[in-house]
Length: 339
Image (cartoon, rainbow, N blue to C red):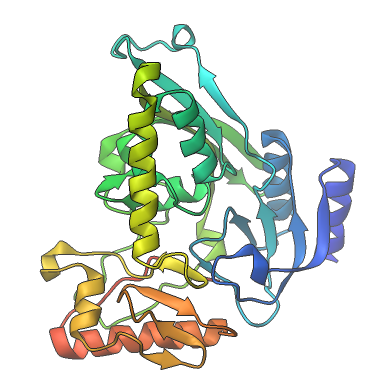
């Protein structure tokens, strides 16, 4: 009945949706069952209406970008999925429209809707001779997901180039609003953003996999503006070469060899080494549960060898946490999201 209420709301708002939508191909892990409703808004206002409709119907919902950090369940997902796949516009903001006298002459502001693929953003910057996003070349996923996770690549975080965000906030069961927020460094940290629910560090506790709590999420990225540096046409080839370098590093690390979510665990330099090295030192390279495997070539990547299930991936994550805890005395914190 609640789904019927939301369907009627979507039809009235002319927002496209499908029912019993398969999910496996919508994540880079290639696992998962289906969603009862899969909503595909085309504008920010439709995105807001979809969030508001699901909230009013008291239905749990999940906002999906590129699915590069998500593990969908083996059984049908008991939540509505709102996809940002159609929200992918990129624009250059005229600095005359921004009341900010701290921007230098060669600074350029680029706004991306939340569903913009990260590679499309990097390509746009490269084509226009904008420098600053090269480290994110080859990163799967979307702008919204990268901002939510505060994605970090080659010692650079997305927050390092972030200027402003636009977000949709749930105010009440029947009220949402769109707001904009200037970047405030105090709200951001290593793979942490103000869009994530508050989570206490788990370093001293037993290993756990954080449970995604639909009711905790009240604010959602709708677009982000980035601060980049305008270069001369003669410097375009240098930007292109840097992008190629980072893409090749990903290839050499095996990021594209099998379905995966990239890094499974956050790094914590207080442990003395990156998580991948720690997992390797725990003799876990190649450890397999079903078709889920700790990559033989990188300790912090779990791959889907062929027909892995979400359950197998979760069990493997827990096994890695357990072994590392027993051998080294601390808990690895997953960065992938299990629904």
